[in-house]
Image (cartoon, rainbow, N blue to C red; front, side, top):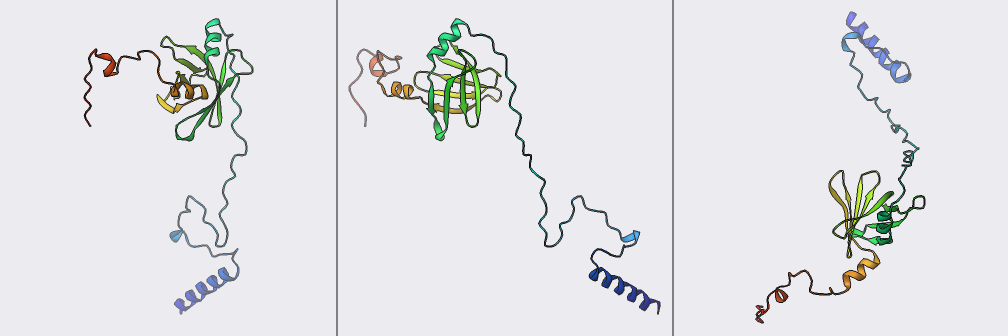
Length: 193
């Protein structure tokens, strides 16, 4: 008899839970399960995602740049300006900085880096990021951009129109001395095929 009374009470509680979804029987302390870390999605409802941040990062603070000296002015005049086509369909754009004389802006992807031109003793032109992150090296026939903190090339094989013309022009003079026909006075004429 007691058994039938318990079954009837359980059936009534189950029926009440089905007919009234907001009211459910509370289980005893012994069978209470721990709540999960994530809330369960209700049937038929799409789980709500947290809203993405609408605001972007604030713009970088302007750095006080020292006035350009004569060497920097000379180096800036040697830079190739305009668009550079690079490997893997990447591109750089080099232009004068409108706020600071003899400083250059290098645009790559969605960033613009303010750079100081420095002429190296090897003849290459170095464009050094004023924040110390990026470095662009320009030589007569190509340019490349490096991330100095990571020690990796970001993009290589970049050529401006002037660099393309210099690369297409045959070398003048005797070259670097690595051509075997020019290095020895009596080079053999035989060619192995």
